[in-house]
Structures are given as structure tokens and as C-alpha cells.
Length: 264
View 1 (tube, helix red, strand yellow):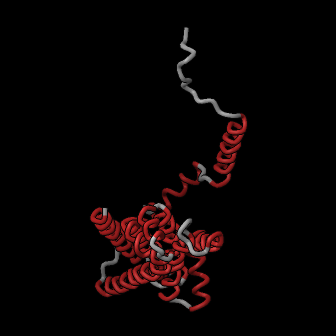
View 2 (tube, helix red, strand yellow):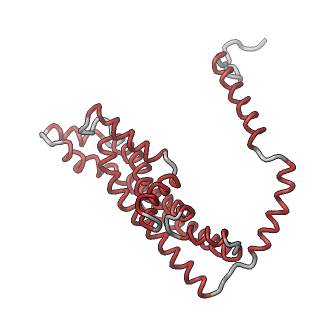
View 3 (cartoon, helix red, strand yellow):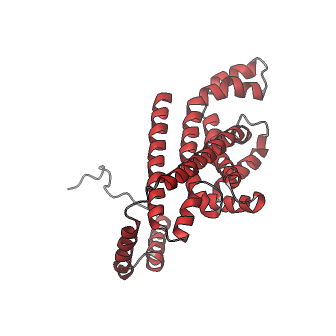
């Protein structure tokens, strides 16, 4: 006879939860039928992809072309570095205004949170198109895009790090009459600094990857060179650029991982 006191191996779910799960499964199945590739499309696409890869091999290693790719990659890194640096600096006041209990705005902190959410939810390429229309083609539009994207990314996580800071030093400073800005500088930022540094490194790594594709819409960097290569059917040039992008992204991930391990 089974023990009535033993826990059930299958957790019980409410009818509402079961209905939601069934509806979600139905949505996934219907969506897969509409947008997922069919076996016929996969069978027809594999030979075409193999033919394209064959046209991309061997990569173009002419010195003049490699030098042009090098300077485009330098421009890409500059966009990521400058955009991240300015974005991180601007993220700090946004995070302070958004953080619960330490914000000087009180209930109006949600205004700052909404702005940060707006910066984060609009895709990078949309911001790049807007800035290209505003300031023209080139690296300036790409840098402005990375700034906005960094504010959206760091603003949220900086605010969470400030909210999770130890409250005892803050209470001690408040007890002796310190203002909110003094508490921020004297208690919140020192305690949250490791988390802020980690988030900044993640933002820089993310910015390098983002800045690569911004050139596809005219916002400067190596992506612009990649778009030209595909537009002119220069597939050997494109394969060289893709390999350079891959190497830079892997190198950037290695460097940021090492730096994060030292911070921790």
C-alpha cells in the first residue's frame, strides 16, 4: 500500500497553468510551421551554401587589402571603446536616479527607468539608422549608437548593483547627516564597484560585437567593408573580413574574461 504521506513525484498544476502551457505549445507548433525551414528548403540550401563557401576560399591576403581591413578594424574598436566609455559615465547618473531607496527622485525614479528601458529595447540597428540620418554616414553615428546601447545595458545593471549594496554604511552616513550624493560616493559606489566593473567589461565586449554590424547601415567600422564586399560579390574579401572579426571577438572575450577574474 503506498504511503499517503510521501510526496507526489508529479507536481500538481492548476487548470489555468495547464491551459497556458497547452496554448504556448500550440503557438510554438503553429509558428514553427510558418517560419521554420522545411526539409525541402534545407536540402536545397545546403548545396548553395557549399557553393558560396567554395567561392570564399581562399581568403584574400593581399597586403593592401589587409592593411585596409586593419584600419577598419581599428576604427571599429575605437567606436566600441569610446562609445562604451561615454556610455558608462552617463549610465551612472541614470542608475542612481533609477535605484530604489537611494534615488533623489523618490517615486519619480520610474521616469529614469523608462528611459533606460527605451534605450535598451530599441535595437542597435534602429538607433544606427536614426543617427546616420541625423549626423550622416561614418563612425560618429556608430559611436552614438554604442553610447545609447551602453546606457540601456549598464543603466539597468548598475541600478540593480546599487540597490543590492550593503545598507549599513548608508545608514551610518545618513545618521551623521550626509546627503544622498555623499552616501552614493561614500557607501554605495565602493560596495558596488566590483559589480560595476564586471558590467562595464561585459558592455565593452558587447559593444565590440555590436560595432561590427553597425557598418551594415553606414555607421562606420569593419561592417561597412563587409557590406561592400558582399554587394560587389567579392567573396574572398568577405571571408577575410569574417575571419578577422572572429579573431577580434575571440581575443576580446579572452581579455575581458581575464580582467573579470582579476576583479573577482
